[in-house]
Length: 564
Ligand code: ATP
Ligand code: MG
Image (cartoon, rainbow, N blue to C red; front, side):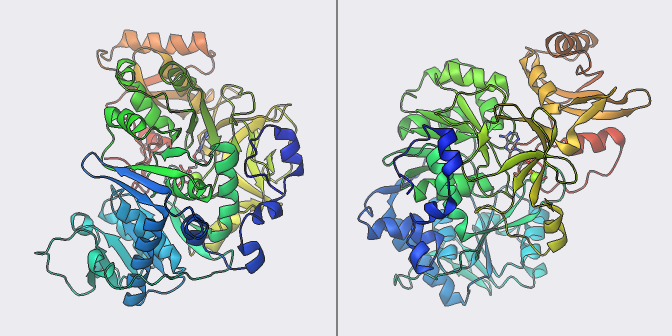
């Protein structure tokens, strides 16, 4: 039986004896067969006498609110009843397009409570991106705000029957199909829960669009056994913890690591609304006495850009564990974490498609700086060739997962061909390239499509970007391979400069020399171009495919997830 208090003290032993069936015993549905994520994350705590524990601490600077598990249970029951009154049924897609707020959370829980599929969309999406996703998913309803309504082209979405408006004032005349969130919440507070099959659809997450058109990834209720384990072993969540995952629920990190993993472990989550401001973020850590903090390299880099004086103005002593996912974690960022928090940031690797953490650095295992650590217990991770044959240690190849695992996606929405393409010879092929050392640690090289082949040498862009970041003039860097008749490809770096630096030929030479000296001659960029901005996804990932398209004069493809 899985000991709920167990720390991952003996990784090897736990890894070898781990059995998902045992984790299932933690949940009553292993006996009853009745499963629903909202029951396990919210209602169960109420039934078992933990209803008055705080589930959510919210602030956006103006509103600061606290919700118990009992309160979220009641509110989400009300919203669920509201959806039922509109005729929304099990399996239908209901989208949420609104800023981070308690209402967003209530809506998400209400949707999943009735067995419908929630589709959270990041609030910064523009009309085209919103339309693509609502049309692709065949959403029947969307929960939004009056402000964002103008970006929903209702008349060109024939399947969309209901628009639920949060915070519409009295003067807002309701059009046909529109309903007020506040009115729906007033109808009934009868508890309601739809018991579903373990592989019933729960969430439809669109991927970040770093490599192409975003894919609609379907996640299911039984993903909870995986998310529970990630929460325990990777995020190191303990009863009584205050936990802040900064990701927006529009991305998988924001739901899987932001809501499910902590609540399954009975932990309080923090949500910060409003725009990113470094001082506000440090303030949030201080104000709520956050114990475990989960963010992304892009956010850490932005905080780092503020210098080391700002964090000194806050009491950050409550933080005991820091995590990062979404992109490779630059050594420079790890150094910053040690300096500012006195803590090592723990990198963990996963994808929208994997539904939860797959490979991680654990608190109890020694960290090899630059490595993504070791697979989660219960996960078979390997390096395979293009045919799906396992490769020996220290050989670069496709990072692959033995299929299936509990949080694995079960569909690419309406695209079975695309879904099948992920699997080969019993392996899920991630699209990332990596190797495993002789002690079982995994090392990320880059996305397969981004790896550069120059004069017979493989170079991962991340390695070059990380080295560039250590140069005092460089604020951010994106690195690609450019075709070259002699070398196959040569390395080109796009760079934004820190304040106080001006582009010049001397600086270009200095930067090239720096990488040559500190990394390797073959990995030094032969071409350097200064830019005001590096193209990034709204979740903060460098879009190298856009840099390549610009460089080669090719079509840029889907830009719906690109930052302004
Ligand atoms: P799309 O699939 O639409 O092109 P995306 O792959 O960026 O976009 P996500 O599912 O959000 O969409 O991101 C998963 C990818 O993020 C991984 O395949 C990997 O390249 C990268 N990634 C995530 N975590 C890490 C990590 N810890 N280290 C290195 N890379 C990471
Ligand atoms: Mg991807």
